Length: 228
Length: 345
Image 1 (cartoon, rainbow over the protein chains, first blue to last red):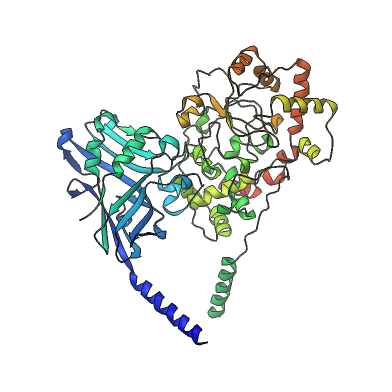
Image 2: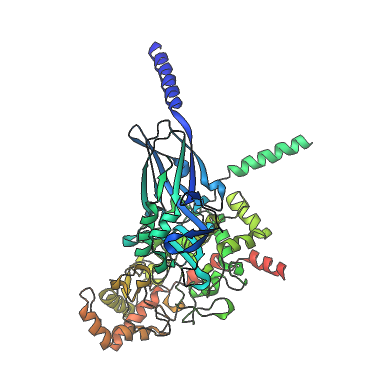
């Protein structure tokens, strides 16, 4: 009887200790154009292109977000698949429950292959979100659309719909970032650096799984960093 | 009084929340393989099958409310589009491929002639949004359905929630299509030892096993792989088959091997419906030009058939027709939809 009592008290104490370790951290996403927050519909002059650019839509999936603390990875279950949409400010901030000393953050930019072949899902993965191809199965991991006179296309439009889940067209990218912050993480994505590096004058649209989609996805994944 | 009413409503809500799903048992013979479809993510339920049937037959899925899934996949044609080489969509536009027959879909991994669709749940998105088929968007379809009392009630009864989402819509459509199992042809009755083949059918069966079974494998009569049918390119269509999906040179002109079940109801044949008669298909595969092509491919066997053997083979192929499937009343136009449509008028 006494042993049971000691075990019970020990269990309660351990649970309390572990609970104290858990904290609700805030993860915010900032989409930048150079040093400033990117605004849809605003003109940005780009020296490298000697012209301006305007963005109409920026959306991408973040999936399987995990936080590393004390050398173990903690899956953030509620954030299995998150659609980030610059037009929807609520999608740019999220609460994550993790251990207090976050050392690393890792996630997929896009949707993994297994989810891609597992049928219909709801929430952020519902095909009504406009991030699923209809003529050929697969999620669009990233959509970046806008216009610039550097493109000799109809209305100077450019459209990058990046996806592909199998073989050489697998475009989902793993991103791992080191953290020195604990309670508020700010994930930044610099679209200017992406846009300048992709050599836009030669590429106005990517609309299907392709090697170009993989190249652009890889490039975009390198533009993420955690705010110092 | 109002307290009693509130209690009653509360009890009713609790009852509905814990309502047992009306389980739908998918029946198929023991010689069928294990289905490919993962039913754990979408367990069959009679009310969802019924909702899927409503959606399948309702032209509300198309832009001008004129074309339903059943327009090109009619139950009387084993859910194919008999007598049309290529199907027609909204505004009488003509598509680029022959509408495939829909049955035994639970055993298929990929969909469409080129396998562009990787899951049955996602298949309906393709015809809904194709400009020559239904020309719609799933978002607008949901808006239209949400305005209909019939669908608000049906989704509520099925999902205990009247809010319609893409996931619920697509999974309900899958449920009806999964219920389309064809396994009661004469061939099946022979396998179940309920009857016997005639002498001619037996000869045809042996010829089938010798020449056709490697691609059109029993008991589903397709291995559901992709293969070159060696048809010359139709320059009006420029259809390169699976190449469009994979961009791999070896997939150029490969198309999904169709099932041979219910052939009498699903003519014309091939991906572009270019052959109206079965003997034309056999003549194609036994022609000198095809023999020459097959000799180059170590995976393929040259098919030699005399005229008598072709007749025997066709006599066996006709044993794959399943009239009980084609005329199954559970697969026909739902009466409740007819009443709804009359109400609109």
